[in-house]
Amino acid sequence: MHHHASLRAMLPLLAFTGLFVLVYAGEPVKYGFLLIYMEEHLKLSPAVRGAVIGVQPFIELLIMPFSIGLGRRLGNVWLMCIAAALGVFANLCFALWPSATGMFAGQVLMTARTETRRQA
Image (cartoon, rainbow, N blue to C red; front, side, top):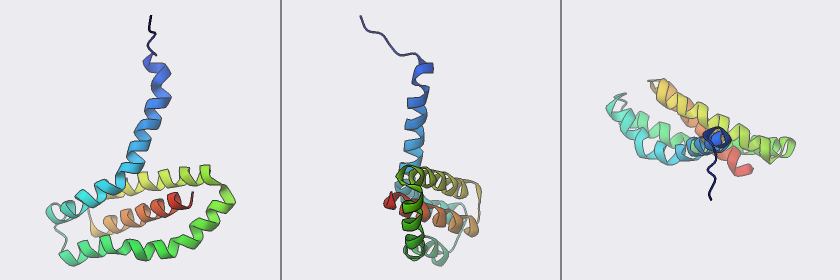
């Protein structure tokens, strides 16, 4: 006889799975749809769209020493929590801030998330 877990017992697993998908699926979704969103909905020029996407390597260079020091000070678990929070805030910027400034803010936060996660 098989016993099925109740939905209440599975809530922590479902919450973790949902957060995992939101945190780690953000990067591919961003590259797949952010340019389309900026072009069709925000009507940003190609130069601005390119700048938003192209700012990532520059930001990574600036954040790298900071994230290494943060990782040594806080440890991997806290670093992953920070990376998750940065990813959530980045996606919120992309979704809720309908301007070039919001796209840059989201990109900076997403870059910080990527670099923080890399150091963990």
